[in-house]
Image 1 (spheres, rainbow, N blue to C red):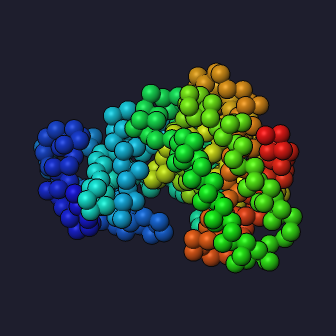
Image 2: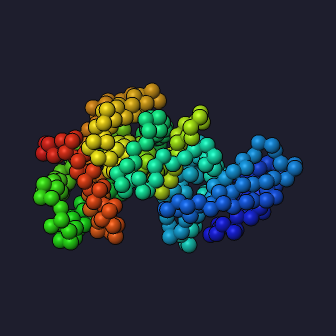
Image 3: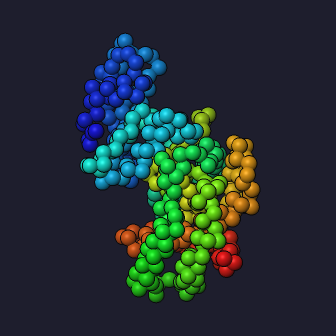
Length: 362
C-alpha cells in the first residue's frame, strides 16, 4: 500500500507491474510524475522508462489514483474484477488495492489522456451548458450500453457488487424513505419559502408515495435481479473520456466509486435529467433519440428480454427517485448554485415524463 505519489518509485512500479503479470522481464528505471487537477480525486500521470531487457510493448503512460477515508472501498472491487474480466469501455487496470484499516487505496491504470478528453467540465455543468456534441453523445451512449450489456444479469451482481443501498432489500428501502423524510423536513424548514409552490407540492406528493414503490415496482426486480446490471452510479458526463478529434477510438467510462447492481436507466438519468434543461433535452428530440440509441445498442449486444417500453418505464421511475438527490445535496453542504439548477432540471424532467401520473397509479 502506498499513500503518496513519492512512494511510486521505479522499484515499487517494477514490483507492482511484475505482480500484475505485465512486466515479465526487465524493470522500471525511471518514472516522471505530472499532476492532474481533477476536483474529486488525487491523480498523477506517470511516464515510465524501462531497462533495455524489458519487452518493447510495455505501457509507458500510466495514471495513479490515490484515495483515502475509504473512498476507494467501492471502486477497488470493481477494478479487481475488471483486471480478471476486462469489461468493455473501461481503462485497463494494472493494480488495485484497498486497506480497510487505514481507509487508503490506490489504482494504477492506463493513461488515456493523449487520445481522450473529458467532454465537459464542472463549470459548464453548473452553468447548465454541459451538452457535448452529437458525436461525443453517441459515443458515450454506445460505451454505456456496451458496459451495461456486459454486466446484464451477471452472476456477480448481488455478490461482488451489492445492489444499490437505496433498495438492497425492503429494510434498506424503508431506511432510505426515512432518510428522505428527514432530509425533506430539514430542507422545507430551511429554504422551503424559496421554492415555488408547485415544486414543493411535487416533492410532498412523491414522498408520500415512496412506500408503495417497493411492492409495485422494486421488489420483483430486485429479488430476482431481473434486467439489472452494473451501473457507474455517478454517471455525469464528466465520468466519460471521449476520443479527441481525428482519433478513431471508443469512449470510456471512468470513476467507479459508486458502482453497484442497479437499473441501467439510473445512469441515464444522471446523464440527461440532472443538469439538462427541458430545452436541452428536447432540442431535435435529443433525449429520446439517445434513449432509443441506448436501447438498440443493448439489443445489439445481446440483451433481448427488455423492451423499449420497459426501459422507458425504468427511466421514469429512476427520475422519481432521483429528484430527492437534489434535496440531499442542499442539506449536506452543497451550495445553492449546485443544488438549485439540479433540482430545477430534475423537476422539469419529472413533469415532461409525466412521473406524477406514474406514481398516481401505484
